Structure formats: structure tokens, C-alpha cells
View (cartoon, one colour):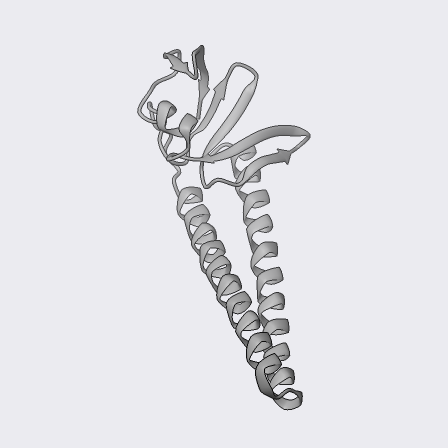
Length: 151
């Protein structure tokens, strides 16, 4: 695998790990809040506060589940070593001056001073790019785009 692409994965994995750690910290704080509220509250105020914290906990749990899924997906894509002749998950694609890594939707990432976008194959642009080859011309939102590089 090309070293730039490997650095992209390392950067993305580090970002997702940080997100997971923050969510775990938030989950612990909510759990601690629920326990503290149990010790010191009574009545309707207790029920409302506990319900709010339970919803917050569920939201954090869902976000944590998604972040763990993203981490697993990044590791799976990182393991793909053979370049493909068509755009697929794990492909690094250049369209004009913009670079895209087809993986998870992480948005803009900067690696070695270069900005690129990590997007899902299910994103609008990802759906158009997948299956095409270098030098293919495509129509995206009324504009003609050309795949100039594919790794």
C-alpha cells in the first residue's frame, strides 16, 4: 500500500479512537450522574432527570456503537493491499484537484499538509465514483468530472 494512503488510515483511525474514548468518558459521566441522582433525589423531579439521563445514555451508546463500527471498517479497508482497476471501498481517488478516500464518512482530513475527503460509497459522490476507472468522465450534479488518479 502506498505510504500516503497508509498515513490517511492512521490519521483516520486515530480520530475514531479519540471519538471512542470521548464517548466512553461521556458514558461514564452519565452513569455516574444517574447513580448520584438515585442517591439524592425523590419525586417527579427525580423521574424526569433520570429519564433525561437515560435518553442521553442511549444516545451515547448508539454513537459509541457507530464509532466502533467505523473503527472496524477502517481496519478492514486498511487491510486491502491490492490496488483495483476500478473505484471501490478503500480506493484513493483524485478528481480534479480533490482527493477522496472511499471508506467511511469522516469528512475532510489533512495528512502531510494535503486536504482530502473521506466519504462512504453510499454518499452521493461515492455512488457515482464506485465501479469507474481512471480517466472515466462522469456527471455529478450537472458538472462533468474526470477521475485523474486511482490508487
